[in-house]
Image (cartoon, rainbow, N blue to C red; front, side, top):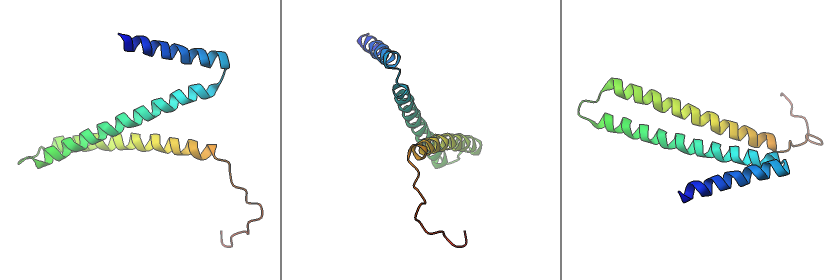
Length: 110
């Protein structure tokens, strides 16, 4: 019960900070934490499904339909992971200042 009280207090304190300071970066930090947790969960599920595929394929008579279904699930998880990672990479790229082309020679043939 103590952990739920501590968690409620922590969330209440964070909400107060957001409201009193008006800083959007606190909300963004919470979203980034949530995204990292989601990525971690997706990677864990991906490894569990991969282990189940290996286990099924090691059986003397593996069930081909089950293996195919598990592989589809694994692929779907991998696609979700890739999309989330690409989104994080795009945010990081957008946050970086662009390099200036001033003073650099033009590349011929481009």
